[in-house]
Image (cartoon, rainbow, N blue to C red; front, side, top):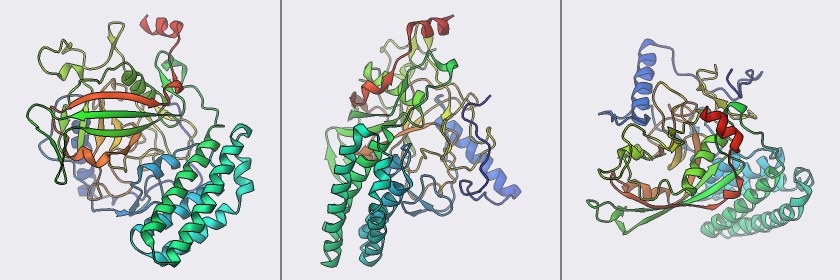
Length: 425
């Protein structure tokens, strides 16, 4: 049984357009999948060529995984889209403001003004939105709506005055308040526990934030990001337990234990930056070369593959989208954003992940929207929300000076003693 399976919906709205069913196309996809699996495997194999990808995708903020030629690459937008229990009106408000933001960034004030009007229409349905907010969060939600309305008025005035930079800043303030509003709605979500067979594993309810500091290795000197030198890099990551509770919980648990502190970057090839294998550390580290993961009770703690189709209520465990008969469906947390967080695993064993993870250095000249070879095959458990572009000069041998859970650690649910005892037997 594959937990989280849902019968296909009546509409094909979530299914992406499949590539042409030619022999050449099938062969290319097969080779690409094989190369990708080798690249992200927990083994030390590094392919000589990157996976084959299709043509470049256009930037837009419409869907979590694109359905066609457009893709959303904004990590904050993707995190909003992955929140549960958000009302239709709040989604319409988000869509209007994100369209406004996108067009202001393109200096297209006329289209931005039209999008702003859509957002104002959605904001006028405040009563319906507040009904979706738990009573304990009602005041917070109302304050967010007040901020949104004030900011939208400012956006309109700045667009009319042809001050698009200031209009963009006000739009971003409005979207920050949209996040607060949607998080208030999501706070009423009764998140289910993972399946009982995984009771010995930690899991995350909701979200947590992890702050990570990187320092250059001995042979690196300083980080050089677009001509600017850095002695250290600071990045902020939001880890999502709504769509991947076990994967996110495992990661947060290892961070709070200090597992990654002092660990080196073990792969950096322009496609991914990967770390987390204690057996791959420098000589003298004391790591057990036979145990390439987090060891608990004398055994490597392994977690199941955990992927989630957009619109489902639960993740799929121990199976890919293809295994579940839904290859090409949109992922709730897609690998669309530069610095997306993914869990590495062995190529042919979906439940072989332990402690190795990677940042994906996604860019617009990589996979076309919704057709990348990662969604539904690897767990995407969060996004880098600050400092993502700094990862471009991270190299093998660089050091994780520190990794800390800065918020949300209280959302971590640790296994009980009886569950651990059963797992050890």
